[in-house]
Length: 434
Image (cartoon, rainbow, N blue to C red; front, top):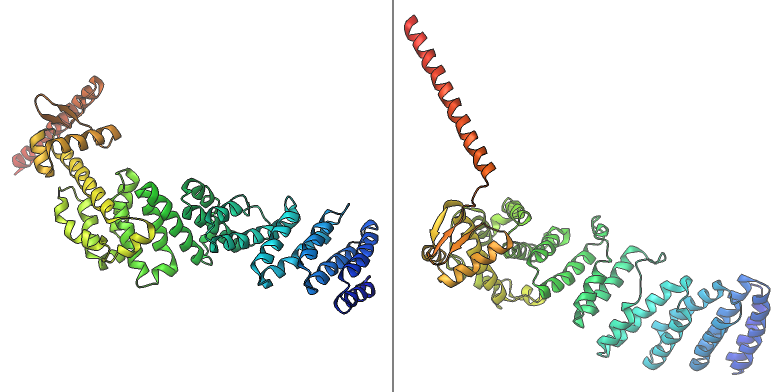
């Protein structure tokens, strides 16, 4: 150590004689000499010693002023500032007085602002400050402290720490009802990080937060994806309570999702899961939706409402993620009606509106509204003749399509005639030989 003797002399002067300012001034002279000479180890050594003396002497105001002074000195070396900040950051957690702790954090965040080489320290200080604000009930301030920190580009943080930081950003945005910013933050997390199984605890936290966002938007298919990913997590699967719960929510929100080719494929995938054998109600629900038969909400309402009630098996989970039994019941009734309309469109070319409503167990007005919505979204083809009260499910064919069908039918007929003649001729020859 180049300035070991000067540092020891100054420490004795400050701690034994109480002349802290004189000790700091003496070391500032050494720091200036080393800095202007470009002596990186010497400058770093003296700078760290100066702030240590202030801390050990419990001169808090002088400590903050000295940190700012050293950081702003002309041609100050990056290595010296980095070492000083790293040393001072250790004292944040050791500081018991809240006001002094906040002042030290503010000072360190001020001197690290805009400096790439101390980004990691600044991010950690911001997280500590946000937690302090949250403990005081200042949620907006806590969110504002974290929201502008970009940790995904920091090279000094491992992926676990980065993910935990972003999850904290997402959580604070959700707590303050800033859902759009929460989703922007959540998309910063690379889901490939979760594939190796070492971050399963963070994966569970991620999807628990994401489900709150999708619950707010009532995006049922994204909720299905989130709960499916939760269920596929090893730690959740091995949990005798969390595993079945995640599977139940997966099935429910899959069935509540609007019909699409992907949703249809996922229903058949879920239907083949072995775990579903242990959940008879949910197995039956999936079978009802994957079978071309009509059924009514009354067939499953009692069992489903008992599951989703506040005191039911899923009541606690729905409350945690922000879901409601009323939303599930209402949406499930709509999806059952839509399923029945799709089934009827496969078996009827034309049907009376009154008959359609009777089969669906709803009023004529509700049947017409649901059918119109499905036609608008392209789920089924239908035309309603309101004066006649007739619904037509068969789409009119274009002339080319009609001619192609006629030509195909004639070809089939001629092939049948030719095959029949061949068989007759064959039997005749066998008979003549006999």
